Structures are given as structure tokens and as C-alpha cells.
Amino acid sequence: KNEVEQSPQNLTAQEGEFITINCSYSVGISALHWLQQHPGGGIVSLFMLSSGKKKHGRLIATINIQEKHSSLHITASHPRDSAVYICAPDRGGGADGLTFGKGTHLIIQP
Amino acid sequence: SAVISQKPSRDICQRGTSLTIQCQVDSQVTMMFWYRQQPGQSLTLIATANQGSEATYESGFVIDKFPISRPNLTFSTLTVSNMSPEDSSIYLCSVSIGGLRELFFGEGSRLTVL
Image 1 (tube, each protein chain N blue to C red):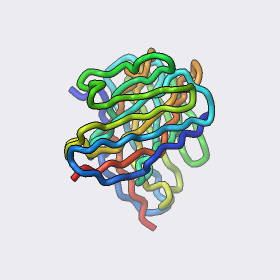
Image 2 (tube, rainbow over the protein chains, first blue to last red; image 1 turned 135 degrees about the horizontal axis):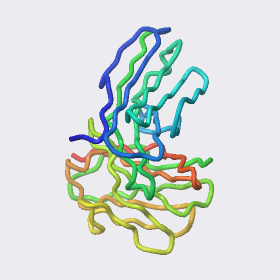
Image 3 (tube, each protein chain N blue to C red; image 1 turned 60 degrees about the vertical axis):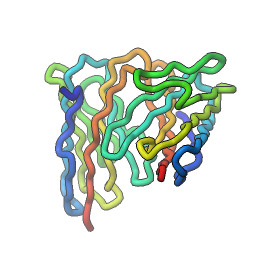
């Protein structure tokens, strides 16, 4: 069983739509990361959270530790938001404590 | 924070050859990590590179195939040796800063083996 499940795997939406990407995990964690991967392959960290909710610009991330579930929301989506969004639960310890989802491929059409 | 420069950004290589990927960080970090991302798959940790000691490899990865150097606290290289088409992937280096474990990644090296 995959330790991390992201949904949807692919999402195409129109500019301005509200986007939600979900992440469910099966392991106990100390934190969870949301990452953005650009078409060239580079990865940028969007959020690291261990409880509640964080907001940065148009992006909002929430986590429910008891339910082992996190969501990433994008408000007023824009074509530049088109990327792969990756959820990474973090068990702590070394880098082997990180597990990565396969990512959600998001395309925002103008 | 940390800015990571990785090169090459992409390369096309012939079967049986080797390629070295370089990773430069703009600050001193204790540990650097190398990941592989095969097409359509999630990131997989190859090894952890510590300055002054041999790299620690994850299950399924060996030093002969993926030799790593870590000559100082800001630089590391990963070599993909005797390449085959199955090695076609994006290779990423990463660091984690401080106790908060915030993650920083390089731009990735997209490798295609013919």
C-alpha cells in the first residue's frame, strides 16, 4: 500500500477557479511538506506544517493530524500556477523520514 | 534559506557512459541529499552525502553505480555510471536547513540515456 495518496492525479481548470489538492498518508508524522515542481524539474517548497493552517498569498495549506489528511488550496488560479504539486509527509529523523507522493499535475487554462 | 545551483540542467547520453552532476549551495550545510525521479514516479532518495565521510546509500542504490563526492560543506557531485536507458530520470540534490527541516531543492538534472 502506498504510504502517500494524492488526489486528483491530474487536474485541468480555468483561470480564476478555486483549486483543491488532497493528500492522505498512513504514517505518523512530525510535519508535512507541500512542494511545487516546475516543468524543468526544479522543486520549490511551498509549505511545511505540523498542525492547522498556513497561508501564503493565494495558497492555503491545511492539515488534520488525527485524520492523516492535508489539503492544498489555490484561490483565483492563474496559468502560472500550472505545475506538479507534491505532498511529502515527514516522519522526522534523517532524509529517509520523508515520503513523497506522485504529485498532482495541475494545468490552468487562460 | 538556501539557494542551490545544479548542473547540467539536462543532458542526453549514450548507453555505457557516465555523467557527473554537480550541486552547489550558497551556504554551508551538514547534509546534502540526492534524489532520483523516474518518469511518472515520486522522488526516491538515493543517498545522503556528509562532508568528510562516505555517503550513506538507500536500499537499492550502490556506490559503484552512483558514486558521490562531498569535498566541502557547500558542494557535492553525483555520478551516474555505466548508464542504461533505465537511468533516464530527473536527478535532484536537496538540503535541509536547521532543526525545522525546511527543504530546499536544486533545479534538477534531466537525464536521457539512449
